Image (cartoon, rainbow over all chains, first blue to last red; front, side, top):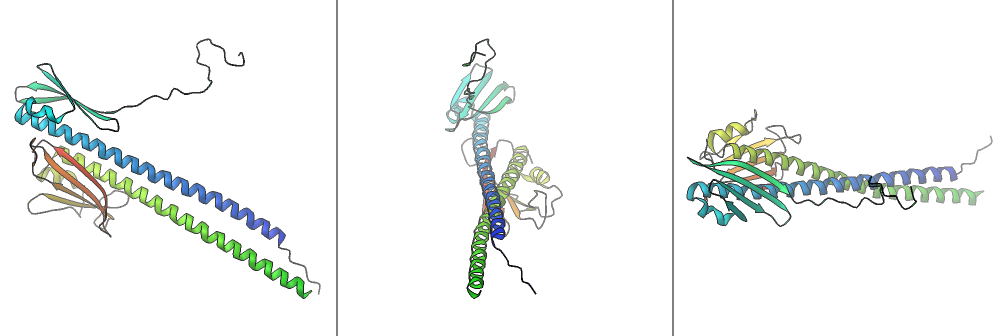
Length: 141
Length: 145
C-alpha cells in the first residue's frame, strides 16, 4: 500500500490566514467596545453636569420664591432684571449653560424659559472644497 | 525516513503550539472587549434609569406622587416608613423586574440649604455586588405629594 505524504505547507498557510482574520476581528471588537464605553462615560458626565445646573436653577427659583431676587441673585452667575422679567444664567467650566427667564406674577414667579445649551464652535475646516462663490480651485476648474 | 517523520512531528507540534498561543491571546482580547461592552451597556442603562428617576422626582418631589410615578407596575418598588427612600429594581433592558440586576434608590432629602429646594439623591447600584454604578443629585422646589 502506497502512503501519501502529508504536507504541512498548505495547512500552515490556512492557519496563518485564520490567525490574521481573527486578529483583525479582535482589534475591531476591542476598539468598538472601548469606544462604546468612552461614549457611555461622556454621556454619564453630560447628564451629571446637566442635573448639576438643574439643581442650581431649582435652588435659584426656590430662593426667589422664598426671599425674592435679592436672596436668589448670589446663586446665579449672571442676573438681569427689568422689573417684570428676570433672566438668570448658570454656567459650568466645560461650556454647559442653563438660562432661565422668570416673570413676576401675583403669587410669585412664573417660569417662562428654562434652556440648557452648550457652547459649540463650528468646524469650518473643510479642505479645498469649492465654496460655490465663483472662485476657481487650484487646478483652474 | 525516520528523520523525515521526526521533522514532520516537530513541525506539527510547533504549528499547533503557535496556533494555541495565538488563540489564547485572542480569547483574552475578546473577553476583555466583552467586559468593556457589558460595562458600557450597564452604565448606559444606569444613566437612563437615573434620568427617569430624576424626572419623576422633579414632577413630584415626595410622597405619594413620587411613588406613583416610580411605580411602573414594579413589584419590587419599596418605600421606607418615613417616605424618604424609594427603591425599585430593573432588568438589564430597563424594564421593572423584582429580580432585576439594577437597583434604583431615590433619597428625598429635607430642604437643608438656604434656598428651600428639596434635594434628591439618586443611586443606581448593581443588585449582586451592591456597587454603585451611577449617582445623580438633583433638586426640586415644589412640595407636591
